[in-house]
Amino acid sequence: MIFICGEICSGKTYYGKILAKGLDKEFVDVSTIVKKILQTNLRISLQGNPQLDVSIIESLKQLPGDCVVSGVRQQSILESFPDSTFIWLDVSQDIRFKRCMERQDKKDILSWEAFQQAEQKDAELGLQQVKQYILNRSK
Image 1 (cartoon, rainbow, N blue to C red):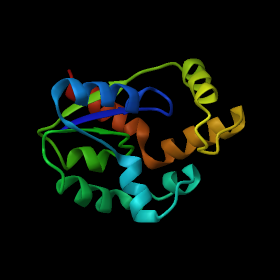
Image 2: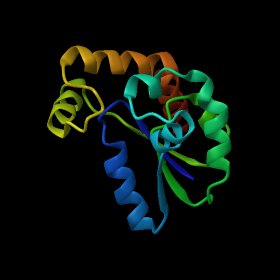
Image 3: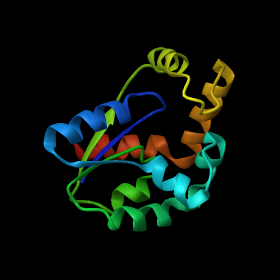
């Protein structure tokens, strides 16, 4: 598997789909898995469940190993796939917020404050640990 990770609006889905198509692999967005588990589309609900990592891991293990996975926010998930390739997209907050406002994809982020709250929820799930895990592996 190839995991593409990054902060909100860093381009995970965009680059993941391009990579998957170029490598003739399946593309999987973790938020799709979480939506199926929780039966919701609201970002606040999707980000507020750190205990979902076990269910996400089990869902990912059922996929073919040759897929591109976008949107992991917990280190425990990456650790469950140690032979995978990990990519961290590092994009400035200003650019990510601009992308978020341009996209307006009904994920309930319509202001700077909501964007910051979404970033905080990602931090609570352990996104910075994900970043460090990926960067430390690439050394």
